[in-house]
Structures are given as structure tokens and as C-alpha cells.
Amino acid sequence: MAMTELAAMNAPEVNTRPAKPHLPDAQVVKEVTHWTDRLFSFRVTRPQSLRFRSGEFVMIGLMDDKGKPLLRAYSIASPSWDEELEFYSIKVPDGPLTSRLQHIKVGDEIILRPKPVGTLVVDALMPGKRIWFLATGTGLAPFASLMRDPEVYEKFDQVIMMHTCREVAELEYGRQLVEGLQNDPLIGEMVAGKLLYYPTTTREASPHMGRVTDNLASGKVFADLGLRQMNPVDDRAMVCGSLAFNVDVKAILEGFGLREGANSDPKEFVVEKAFVGDGI
Image 1 (spheres, one colour):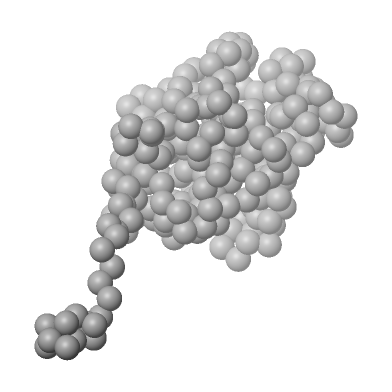
Image 2: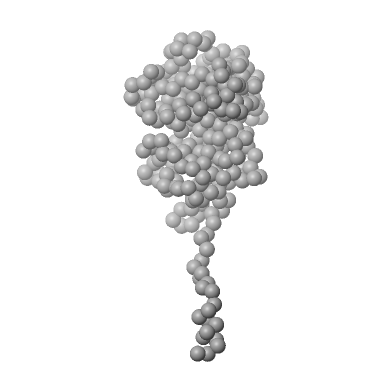
């Protein structure tokens, strides 16, 4: 046998398959939880350079069939101090992104553009005594971040989380989060007595029924929680939901005398206009 043939037989096997391509701005999926057949949450690694304010959003996504990034705005559901990033999402069977995103598993990669922005930050509000978080469906995500941020409890005497879904099961992510805060080693003591949770459903029977808009306009939520009606001196609010929801809630808040603000012009309430609904 020739020396060249012997050398070839003893040479280590070389993997000629191309390495798995990495997505641009890739982050690794660390955990996935499916809450219902329509809702799921997931956690990914956090870029070391990423700094954000609780309540902000980033662009995340996957590659499409043509190899181009398919991105959507997603509120970061984890607080600014968390070592990982959490997101809360709806599943849309024929949605361009969520039809793919809902199948991610631990170890997979997603695209995350590390440029956080958004209006649902405490800096966009004037000082006040009470802050209202008003959300429907996955619009809860930015408030999942804010409810876990010590700054919120340092700046406000009361935090009221109003969240409406169609069915009881769709409230589970928020319910577990709120209940877990009571025993949180970082802010458990701050939350006690300050955070009021008001979950409602619109289709399935539950202790509290009705839309956020109806319960605000009728005064039912104030009666149920033993609170005085909203006023521009004491109350601040943040709104996150569908476009129609945002418009309706804005009109109600303005009826109470509150004015819409922004990062550059703090007022009594702010609205997240980048929230992505059922078409994602």
C-alpha cells in the first residue's frame, strides 16, 4: 500500500458539511412556555450591551423563506434588571411571523435588534400618586416588565393593573406573574399593599367581567377596588392594546381630565402605538 493511501486512511475525518448559519443579531432561546393554544412566552439571552427602560420594545423575528429578516415590534416583558429577555406573544396560524415563532424550542436562535424604544416608560409621565396599567391580551407584556421594576413602586403609592381577555385561561400568564411578585426577593416588600390586580374576561364567566373601557367609563372598577374616580392631579396611566382599544381608552382618560404625553413631553397618560395585534 502506498504511503499516501495509508496516510489518507489514518487521517482524522473532516466534516465537510457547512456550519449552521447564525442569524444576524442572534440570541439563543432559553425557555418556552405555551399558556394556551393562542398564547406563549419565551426567554432568550440578553446582549451584554443592551440597556433598556422597563416598558420599552425591540424588534425581534426570524428569517423568511427568502432568507430575509422578518421582524416585528415586541415589548420586553422582563424588567430592565433581568439577565435574560422575556417576550409574550399571540399565535396566529397564518401570521407571517408567529406562525413560525410559535414553534421555537430551547437552543434555537431568534433575531433581536438591540435598539429599544417606546413610550410606556415612567419618564414619560408627570409625578403622581397612582398609576394605571391598562391592557388587553398580549398588551400585558410591557406591564409585566414595569410591575417587576422597583422604580415604579418608588414613584407611585398605588399601581393598578387592569387586564382583559376573552377567557380565563388567557389571564394565566399575568395571574402567575402578579402572585409571584408577593414573594419576590427583590421587590416583594415594595409590592405588598401597593399593587392592585383587576383581571376581567369578556366571554367566559369570571369574578370580574367586562372590558377595560366599560369598567372605567361606568366607574365599576373604582367601586370594586374602593378607589376614588380618576383625576389629573393624582392619576397617571399607560395604555397598550389594539388600535381601537387605544382610541377608546384615550377618550375615556381625556374625559377624566388626563392629557396624553410622550418621552419629550411628560403628561398624565401615554399610549403604546407600536403594539402588534392579531395579524403578526
